Length: 425
Image (cartoon, rainbow, N blue to C red; front, side):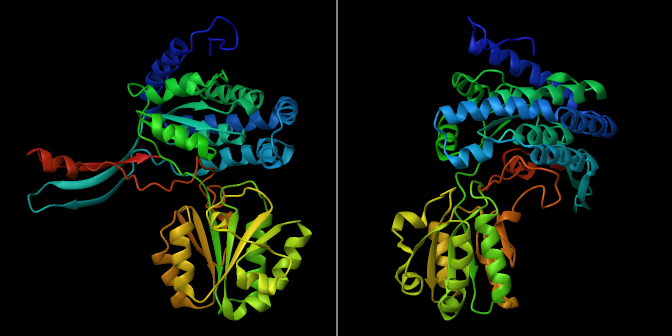
């Protein structure tokens, strides 16, 4: 970018308008970009990230030191940190996206109508995607890769706590775009930490087609309330694991331990464990021993505390809390229906899992739990674009916002409907 937003004086509104104009122009080029060019850019980005590992770690260290000085908590610092393994994972995610089939232009569901017209669905880019996120600098690479592969232009606004890290990654992204001959403005990483830039982005409906917020409750609520652009979001991740009385207990322990302790500060970490009353006395002491190794504080209902006497009493607020910390709420329930009722009342429609060997109960759980990811005998930590084989992810959507369909338009217009667009990503 030519603008230097951290130098004064600086007009945020003019800067953001220029970003939007460039993004809209780049979106037209990206919508017709060849698969080979997009894949070449992704692979070049990955190589650039690998080559810049030392630089990325050094720039990230500046953010970590500033974060510690500002008093960021351990979970936030963990999400902020870049180390060689996480940097390698960013590069691998871009290579996985490059290996995926190009979705743009694919046609499905072709069929003839009685009128003689042939109707089908074509996948097309959204256009310009604005992504607002906090803490995790790896989102910069993930979002850039997914938007690029799906033929979109992206405006990325990371949190102020990751400014140095994000700008260092942006250099690698631009290098990949330039090497592939794609417009550098296809991915623009906002260079200012000024919160006014977010407000401008949320109002730029003439340039931005959809906003994706990824961060804490405060960010999501602000974006939802202020945006004049359609928003795809999830508010928070109150994820559950239900251990049925017909579960394999060894499997149940492994799933429940991983779901809570693999990483504490992520939206797909289990925050509430539900256990059938018939096997609670067997499985809870085993789990408590494992959680003690990770210094997880346990908060339980009365029946839980009768088994785990060291557990603290859970309050109503605990069932609705996304801890992002080594804290776990536990409730003993009478049956599957009570477990699903609890999830419906307290869950956030993010990710929920059942551990059972009963096929019928597993099927009921899959059909009746209304969440973005519903699992059987698997840790909630698998709710991830990388783990699902999609290369990376922008975020988990718990909205029920579906692609526009021209049959809606046909209700308002006598013109015949001849196809529909499934928007990407």
